[in-house]
Image 1 (cartoon, helix red, strand yellow):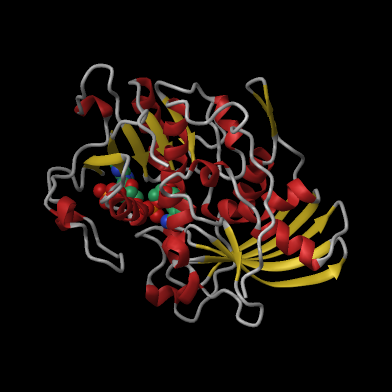
Image 2: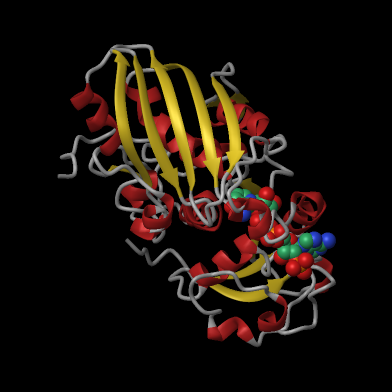
Length: 372
Ligand SMILES: NC(=O)c1ccc[n+]([C@@H]2O[C@H](COP(=O)([O-])OP(=O)(O)OC[C@H]3O[C@@H](n4cnc5c(N)ncnc54)[C@H](OP(=O)(O)O)[C@@H]3O)[C@@H](O)[C@H]2O)c1
């Protein structure tokens, strides 16, 4: 659904040369609402052609319309825009540098949508998975300069799986082991030589992020105040020699007992506000099972359904309240650039008043048929 209340927005990309920045460039090449006008990166890259400085690692060529653009500075003071028409800013910056730059853009009136962890725990900065907790957007003003944060890539996949379970059955505890792709570490992450035949059983800070961010995402938001829920996720995060796609092995203990058909119906029937509003980057279904005899595999499946659907498999009953399953999420699409784009679309739809107050709550699951 495209509404006449929406006007095309000028977008600026910070960190355009990196792994996530390159995904953004591809997704924004033909975006119906946003026009990517400016590509920014570090001093190393400024004043040089994008083609020359982006170490291109995508499986499709660099978009021709951006290839010869001069890369610009990330500082807002080096840019000008018409009065009253501040840009939409996507940040794919390293967390070491993102915080002050994102704040500076917001202070100059920009709507900033960030992938970095710098502001994820900042008061007044909503941490949102659009299908899961859109009501948390209330924590920031609906208009004007502000920062919105995309959660960590592993948190996003896990939150999508947990959302219908929390809603339909209640979730008491979650234990998870992640097998995370190399692209999650950015262009300066471990080399192919370092990763070949290897498993790295430590991703510094990742487990703490997962545990902290899920407390916020599943926390209660009322009257502009957020109350995080008690910790309920325990994680072990590992890096494996996979290019794209984080696989999660999840064990969950529910509050209410259930059976397999009801559990599958809740997961596959899960829809959120992005689907209700028909946002351009919203997948038709946020969660899908493949055939259980053929569970999801990153190389084959991570980019299916535009890389925006978390793919499920290997559902196993331990008891009526304890279930195990596997989930695969594309880390630079749903877990980063695609997720941030969906969040920006939701924020812009909200600015334009397309989401009524009643719509702004996460809708309940609608039962659908399981895939054959
Ligand atoms: N990769 C993923 O799957 C993933 C998923 C979710 C979230 N994230 C988050 O997204 C962000 C980007 O990740 P990435 O994997 O794309 O990292 P990356 O490949 O290392 O890219 C980092 C980007 O930041 C720019 N940059 C570095 N220092 C800068 C400075 N001082 N001033 C301005 N720009 C600077 C780099 O520009 P130059 O090329 O000019 O140095 C580059 O464009 C990180 O915060 C990361 O944690 C990543």
